[in-house]
View 1 (cartoon, helix red, strand yellow):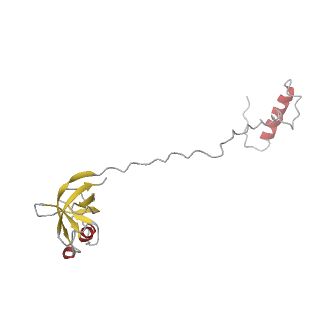
View 2: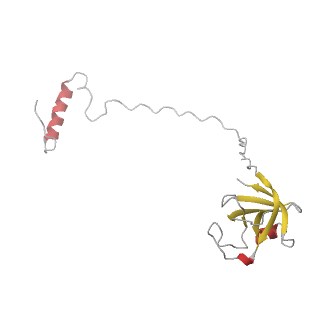
View 3: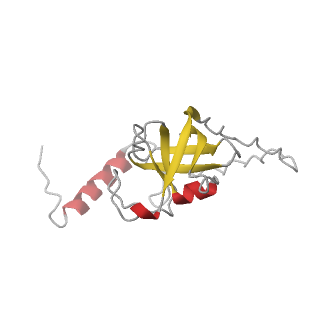
Amino acid sequence: MRNFNLRRPGVCLAAAVAFGSLVSATPGLADIPANTPAEAPAAPAPVAEPAAQPAIAAPAEAVVEAEPQPEHLGEGEASFYGYELAGNRTASGERFNPKALTAAHRTLPLGTKLRVTNKTNGKSVIVRINDRGPFVKRRLIDVSLAAAQQINMVRAGKAAVSLELLR
């Protein structure tokens, strides 16, 4: 068999002529005109009309995620610390800001969010643990001045509170 180099000019033309003569020599294929496609295009299939939609669609049920229940951590006494420690570094490395809603706890991981509720008036505040303490044995938590103001414990200086861990 002969080797054809298809990259040379004129070789493609020679191959096309040879193929054309082969097609014309084949019975049944010679009757097809060269400029028409081998098969006539099929008529387009009829398009099925979509089913009638109801005029008013029923509303989809709303998916409501249940709010996670806070875990009760305990009850005890809370105190607050204010401007006397402003600017000092906390255990987390940030500077203490008495206007921020932060707190100090002995063992909870830094960054933990708690709900602190004053048991005498029912007011609560959400704080973030960013420091260690309190260092008075009977106290459970130290909150910042802003948090103490929100639960109305500034005048007394301390309050009975309950703690809930938020997830």
